[in-house]
Amino acid sequence: MNKTYDSIVRRDIVICQPKEGFRFSVDAVMLADFVKPSSKAKTIDIGSGSGVIAALLAKVKGCTDIDALELQENMFSCLTETVEINGLEDIVKPVQGDLRIYRPDFHYDAAVCNPPYRKESSGKIPPTLTERTARFNETMTLDDLFGFCKSFLKSGGSLSICIDSDLLADVFVTARKNRLEPKRMRLVHPDGQTVARTALIEFRRDGRAELVTEPPLIMRINGEYTEEMRRITGAL
Image (cartoon, rainbow, N blue to C red; front, side):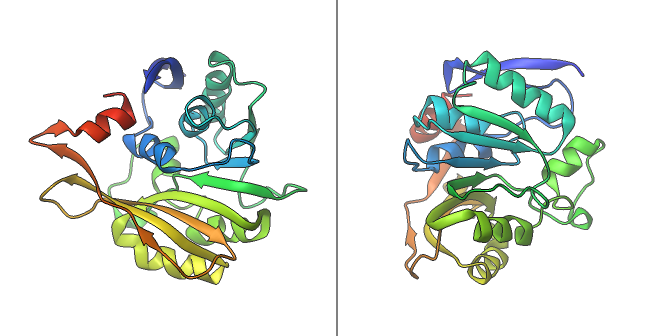
């Protein structure tokens, strides 16, 4: 597999990823920015891919204890390189495994996930298995994600996700079924005249019913990144 090594947000953050096939999107960078972790929290990055979110949480947010769970062998190879390149061996632990059968013998303080959005029948099918696994929910459904967090997040622990905004009803139903309450949400709009494309949401296990909707994140004005998006992405 041919790989590239790309700096993101800051020059000292380098991500290893496949040259062809699935490559990380700006959604992962926005989600890492949205997360408000405690630096000492035991965190799991679910479906870590090439390690974008884990690296940003460690290097930008100051997290010190992260498990990065990834199913696919080729993406796990990139994840491992990302950890090594950025000198994060003492902070980020790559774990190759399937969320549906991964059973740690402890509970996490926080989880973060940029999950596969759709059923495979709901859109154009990507040509490679890596892309299909990353974009569709055949290997990790919302029930899988929230069910895991119900079992392996501490009471009061957080789950932060980025999800297509038109799936919000399904997300909220599944979350409450698994004792995860939405506490904070930010809608992301491609521009100031377009409906929201995605939603950034923080849930709390066993939390009270109280949702704060933050000001919307506008990605572009007149085709150019807004000042906030330039801050978040380092003008990728």
